[in-house]
Length: 303
Image (tube, rainbow, N blue to C red; front, side):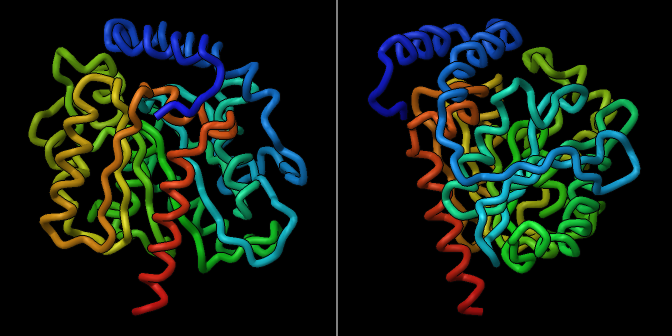
């Protein structure tokens, strides 16, 4: 749901939406190029950023922390995508910093997480890196003005898979320990190597290619294993099948009477713009997520 703004941006996203799935690498880069100049002008006053803080021994086990300048603030941890084999917490100079700037401006401590990649780190390595980061954060949150009892997770694409693994997967075994809510944005919630999956090589590098193991490792089978409030977000113009898997996962949450299960579709957006638009002046999705976090807070306080 693109807010009123630059008509050229709206027109470009509409054009890309029509052809997104034909070449997702090309159009993902085009979306980044469209948003970077806009995000460079985005508000960031009062937010201090600490770069490349280590939460583990591997060079990729680092995080950037965005401090809003308050104390005892809730904490949002963002886990980027990259088809399990690529991607960085800063895929450009502006993306994904923009997500954490936006949340910091709403009073959150923002943590932009990097993690090990396949094939060096295979399933469930990504979710275990989320676990390691949360262990580190629980002991260091006060340094940044954060409240370690009020941590929420947001994952995009493969990062959403890793967040789902931390919250739901019995092989990870954390079941969302220490987390008050999770948001899965354009996440791969079923591991597949189908011909229509443009990232099937990345899935195979992380999960393997054995059909039985792929099914066993898919978050979609564990929607009833955790009671952490969970919101599923997909874009109108998604990577093939991610919208189907997201809707299925949300339906399974609801069937399991999962608390505060929600499903939202970001109209007019594609797999990249669904996160690239944060801090650009469009706030519909951000406000939906904040409302969800508030509801999750009330849920926990009522228990």
